[in-house]
Image 1 (cartoon, rainbow, N blue to C red):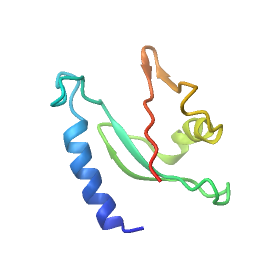
Image 2 (tube, rainbow, N blue to C red):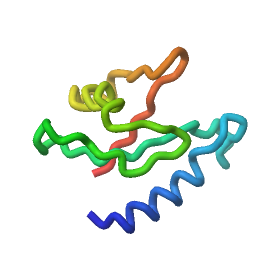
Image 3 (cartoon, rainbow, N blue to C red):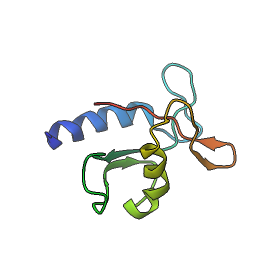
Image 4 (spheres, rainbow, N blue to C red):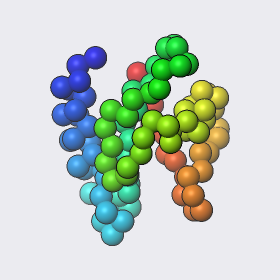
Length: 96
């Protein structure tokens, strides 16, 4: 993987899509409060922790991501919701 490209693409995307709660995106929708780019390989050994490649507007560590990774492993991203807190849920976008 070309991490230089990933870093540049993330910066471009995050600067446009992640903002303070009082901001809105250029489309008029509320901006995301935070985003995390996770390097996750479902074919890799389970003993390896996923790496948080980039994050914006949030501070997390790989240990805190275990519940999220369990949700991803269930492979029901389009039919289930991952709840973060009261009135907060996760929006998933997967890229291959």
